[in-house]
Image (cartoon, rainbow, N blue to C red; front, side, top):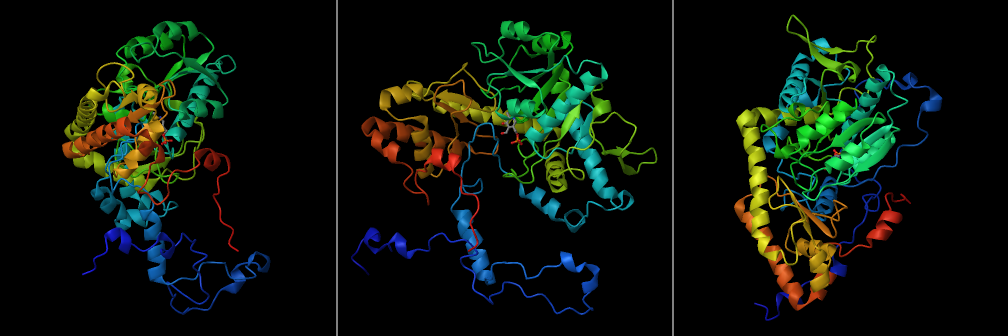
Length: 504
Ligand SMILES: Cc1ncc(COP(=O)(O)O)c(C=O)c1O
């Protein structure tokens, strides 16, 4: 047996494989797959000569094991929900049950072509129709479109619906302002700008909810809509909600509910009952489908009767004979399509599987547990209030915001340092520096799918980092130490992103 320590025996990092692109690994002639020989005459004439390739495409030439290793290695360089706790506030990174993957992979779902004749896709249409019904029931708003590809896409759809509604009343020119609280998620003002309307911010009151006086002062005949999430991004359920919706309705504006935080209230209360007209759902949050990472998310919307005529087309409908169809009524005042085809179908299957496997009581239980877990964690961190106090209130809904301002002042470490050090403890950091109105914000959302042990481990890690910083703040300043990439130059990454590698 060697007398050397593990550290002495470790091979220098330079011997380990550097990160190379799949093109850099390419060697002419290597193959991961060989297609069977053609057993029909090639129909070369079908494509006009000027549209045919002059040369074969430049694809990487690698063997199958190299291909597998390349992508598995890359995936291991990242942090993911399947390898550790991911309390990224506002993002609801909860476990995606694998039963949803099994359902979505069934050949009848996975191989369905979007141009399939509706008469031959009855099962898929029925699933979509049932999902629409379930979302209508959960939101208290009866008309649903599954089209939007993300929450923010749902927001834009909702704002275009609002515009169409005001236009139908001859008020489009007059109603150009959309109110959003100053705690709103960044996508809210961005969607307003994309819809061509103007953002007007409403102040947050001392309790973390809307400042009613400020709301009253800004509500007039120029307001098109109020966009609100409740519980908001501070993790507070605004108890004045019916008062708020009353004030906004009294000036003829619509009410948009950003349903990204539905995870806290599913099966407990409904945006429709609170007085909202339009709501979006993030299926990739509340209904446990994978987050898209810019890919296949889903943000259906539900609307009330006064908005329904303008809803996107085509919609899935149930005919009197019990069959299902796509309704593309051309004479309707619909705003038309918001995307190609009908939405991200694979995500619908996962979300519907989630809803059916939990049932109404299970969905309610998920929300109640999300709130319980967040409050448990908040209590476990309560003795650190000297460094990381709760920004608003005493309790929270499914997430809470701590302020790292005292920690910065007393220990000389910032929220960013704490977040980076958490990576060394095998935890994805919570959201940092959002919401903007909290100095040195740390937004923690544990979700309902985590065990008490995981929450305890997280609390212990935060305690350990604070204790360490009391002794030596430099440790947190230099973190992370155990990740494939250390601290990045975030300003340079944002200003000069390298998102494409030349093939040469
Ligand atoms: C409160 C809130 N609203 C809207 C969104 C936008 O949703 P999406 O990321 O699906 O576009 C998010 C996403 O994190 C959110 O947290």
